[in-house]
Image (cartoon, rainbow, N blue to C red):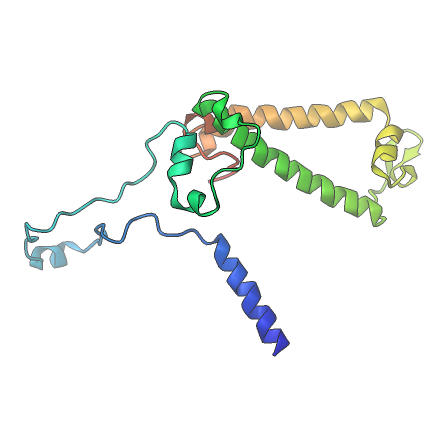
Length: 191
């Protein structure tokens, strides 16, 4: 009995991550038919107005007003913005903030996993630099950073900068709407 309750709770919480339908119930659905079946279809009744479903967003950036207009936003009491950052700049600034929030969240999750792995005793084989093994680095966060040589820190920062540069340079080629400041989805990695 407990097992079934746990399984049902697990599946019910997974439904929270499924997107709802975007088209209203009164909009027309597009059905594709073969040419033979299409010739047998009668002409549509003139009383019904067919509303086409838009294919994609036509905006340049998501504004605060469009976020507030979504029905799910008002359900939870609005947008949590205690510093008023959405009102500081333009819609492009808000898109940049959203992209930075997603990116920093991903970096924080990766850092947590790395911190946990080192704390659990997992180490890379070999030497970090000449005469300094990975196993000799302390497992505490600040102590590990202090024990890392200066050139090792510079390599990590350079690598992070190259990833950021590559992301900004090639973001418009892999996103369907272009760069996140020009209508692309903030935080989107691949199509």
